Length: 184
Image (cartoon, rainbow, N blue to C red; front, side, top):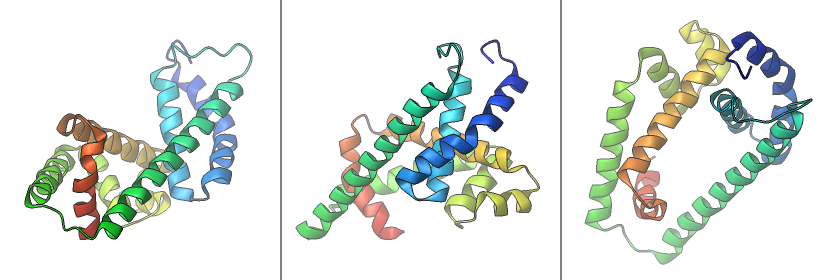
């Protein structure tokens, strides 16, 4: 796999995917989120394959990575809930500049979605806007479930990248996200 052998990667994927999925699902208890996290782990495995050191087995690296990803997910969930509670308790209305920033961010994200290749765009929209499962999307688009997962992961990475460019400090997103969440 380190030399770019895709078949070797596929074999590793088939061998370890159920184990990694089970580890994360036990901690998170959300199937779609777990699938997204597992997908991200394997994308990073392929992307950084030349940097990963595994002498006999890849299992220890995958175990550590799965644990870190689950912890990261919990931290994000906790901080999001805290921000939402802060805005609800505070009772303040978003300022016009925050509303404008939220609109600009939404326009940026919409623009990025429009630039995506057709399959990626469709898979992302069906997943995030219509809440369809990977299996439903794969059937509707006549793609493999793995291709759908890959497309959604790549779409999310593109959107994260655009968001990082738009805001240099993640804390600046709090007000904008509050406005966006009220619209959803």
